[in-house]
Image (tube, rainbow, N blue to C red; front, side, top):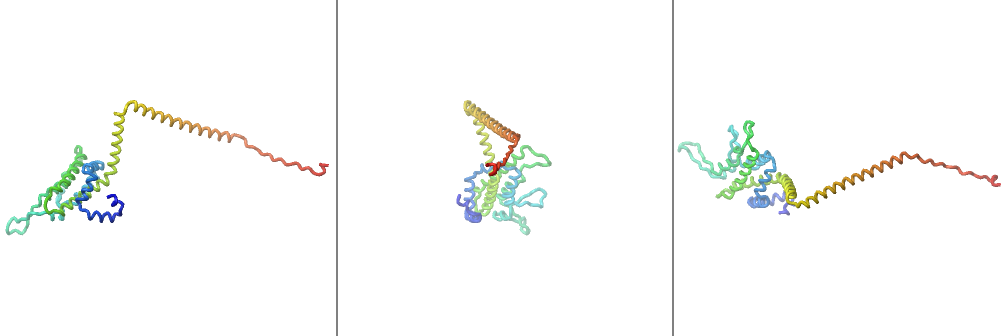
Length: 263
């Protein structure tokens, strides 16, 4: 798997297209468990979590019926064709056909749609709204993941679309939530280490640690003091050099002795 990361994106896409969806989900969840992914969900804002959920799961599985006043959802036609339906006529002479959808279809529509998510109505915000929304998203993802082994029969295409939508949602959540999760984890570990050292480290060692910090601060102050003194001496030397008078160089001409003078 480490070799695949270094390949170009086109080859990675071709290689992963030959791997079945069950193996890809197993590889993903072997490295990032569902509990870890749910904890990454808490590192993002609730608006971003709802946006990821609607983009990768709800819009890939459900269709909104616009003719109703209230938001009503139904399964996509491509998915509903994969499930068997019971068709009947109310009368022998009637031409209209009635059908009863499969129970899995109604269950998934009620499970995936966000109409049951806690919301604020008429500028009234209920208590702990954000935590309730996060719990709703976490429970729906866990239920969708747990429904895979319980479905039996010839619904391979239906299961494939369900697993693919869940896998892309998990990948998007990991890609966005992993950096924030690592930051929060480092901060949590730092707080734990600080609390542990404050509570369990020996008093003598703690005293020595405090004394060492004091000595280091004193050394820093002395270094700053010495640097200030050196800079002051340099400034004084420059002032003295400016105040001194300039040296004048007198050039004397040599006396030329003639031949008559010598006699």
